[in-house]
Image 1 (spheres, one colour):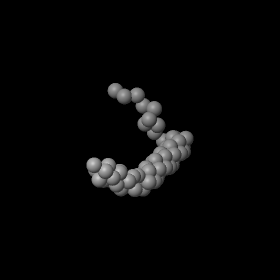
Image 2: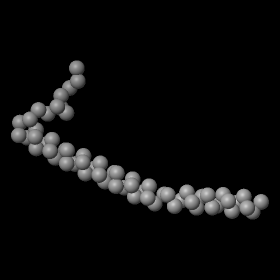
Image 3: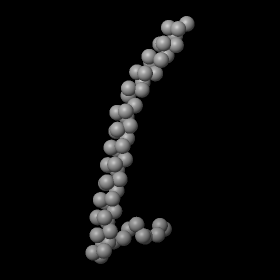
Image 4: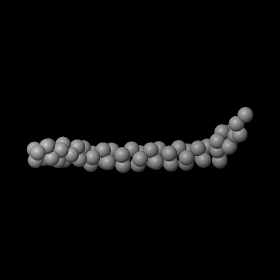
Length: 61
């Protein structure tokens, strides 16, 4: 019976080895998406201030 519990523990430990890389990739994904969003936001604001079309403020039909 101990072999079953040790087997479960071994499987759990093997699965937990994958979690740190997944967490790091998640951090990179959110950091990159926030960076792209901020760059787009600043570019869009500069474009609108120069007289460009503010399509985000247009009401839908």
